[in-house]
Figure 1 (tube, rainbow, N blue to C red):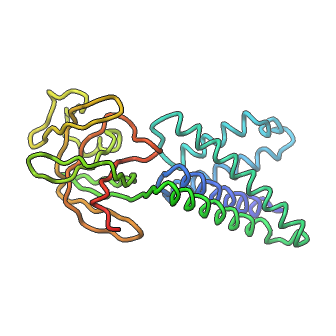
Figure 2 (figure 1 turned 135 degrees about the vertical axis):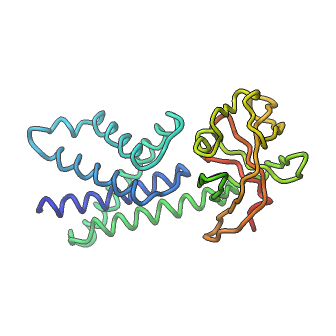
Figure 3 (figure 1 turned 90 degrees about the vertical axis):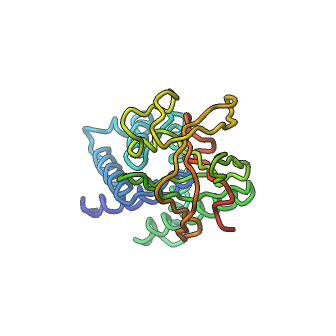
Length: 260
């Protein structure tokens, strides 16, 4: 197989693997990130085929390469989430490898076996994830908000238990980890130090796993929620969470903001 064909095939397979792993981990899919990570994986696969670099085929090196690909493909705020994603990527790789092998045995090793196996593995992974989400009644949605001259887009968990409202406005509150809001926050604002509360910001009392906390919150100049492929403008406050959210989600979105 020519080098360019080998790189293209491996990049396509890596892209499919990454898409499945990222969706299982509730991470947003960014085309340019996935393309760059897939190219990195294809170069690694090509290098591992060289006799002088046979050591690259070892399991520890392969795990490190998988972690690097995932770091390029998405942002990770906790090592535990990254390690879980590496494990999922390896599991999907074995699934896809078994699928490709079975198709090759059934169809006599046709040239399109690898792409067909990739498509089938992605479909199986997506179907399984949809089933798990439906069984657990988990829904994901995306939020796009603007404050000042900065924008942010995050993905979050539609949480029926998030009934938090801001006392003065009565608006529902979306809790977003502070790491995702740094580009929006005024200079000098430190969510862990209430004395740095910027003008126009308020405090809201929220019950968290660590107890009751006072969180800084603000009202964005505009906010939209995307669920089931449709962007809808909503009115809500944004509270700055001090820790990562559960279930790998990036925000806790009140169910009232998302149309059924």
